[in-house]
Image 1: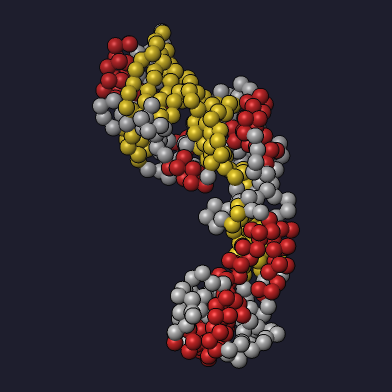
Image 2: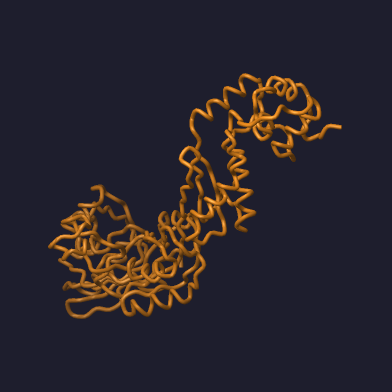
Amino acid sequence: MTDPTFPLGPEVLDPARRALGRGLCAECFGRLFGRMGHGLTNPGRAARIAEALGPLPPTTACPVCEGAFDRIPVWVERCEAAGVEYEWQRFSCGSRWEPETLAREESLWLEVGTSGGESVRSAFNRELGKRLEAASGSEGAPDRPDVVFLADLPVGRVDLTVMPVYFLGRYRKLDRSLPQTRWPCRACGGIGCDRCSGTGKTYPTSVEELVAEPFLRATGGEGTRFHGMGREDIDARMLGRGRPFVLEIRRPKRRTVVLADIVAEVNRDAKDRVAVLEMTLAEAADVVRVKEASPLKSYRVGVAGVVAVAKINEALTFATTRAIAQRTPRRVAHRRADRVRTRRIVAASLVEATEGRFTLELRAEAGTYIKEWVEGDDGRTDPSLSLLLGAPLTVEFLDVIEIHDDPKGE
């Protein structure tokens, strides 16, 4: 009685007869029909065909896989050796074959007339994954692996890709001399020169470096990428609940860490400069979400300028009723496309005013250049507060006091 999931009709038996005598191993013989039916291994398919056609001729050197499936235990050992320095609980695996082998297999399918063959690479990857799962106790997970093993059959080695680990959090920046990320020296491009005293950096450190160093020590990673939900000016503070960011650790040796201890270390070492909070494990998808978000932001701005309070209030009321056309500011024109962006000041209020100075609180759309909106940037922002007041203004300080990234915009 045949297995109902693998019917031995002419579509199987006719190609099988033509494949007899070609010296195929049981794996490769059964794989001629690997996409037909379910519930059987490829050697199991070969065995069911042998029940109908008689025993398969013995083979010593399969012309397709050349014994690769017999050597899977060796490849399992090579995978474990390649990943021995790294923590991995989820993995995926693949393989690289000689193009001639893959072409030879496709020619065989055409010659015997099978329409349900499974590729040698696909079958090898599956079997290697099953054996590696059993040997390591880790989970085969092609969707979100910690590591990826690539068995290079022609070379005889395993190439290891270690996937990054991600941490999501928020940071407050309290120091007006810190850039968000490492800023390579413009003179040498980060190599090191007299201008940067050999550091390769424009600024001694950054939010990224102060946050990343304890994470690198804890994970044994080889480097970082810092993904912020926008960025504040170097001389601006980031206050309130902080700015959302994702810290990406490249090639981590350890993935299981005590986040509370690392956060405490960051906040101790970077005291009065940077503070991190709400840190959790994250995924690659969080990078996209954080980078593409465009939440409203609230600011506190200190302005120098001699203007009557009544006139300031009148100008602020008017400013929230119309859009702003902002041409790329001169200060960032060297690194951003020169174009005009339309933005809005959503809310604006006067917090305090003294002789020759006043403080504003603003809520604006993402991407609004607040300093330029206040000062005018030689007419590149229209209308600017300076234009509305008819007086020259200078921003003395700027603080981001909230990123409104929650669903309610609060």
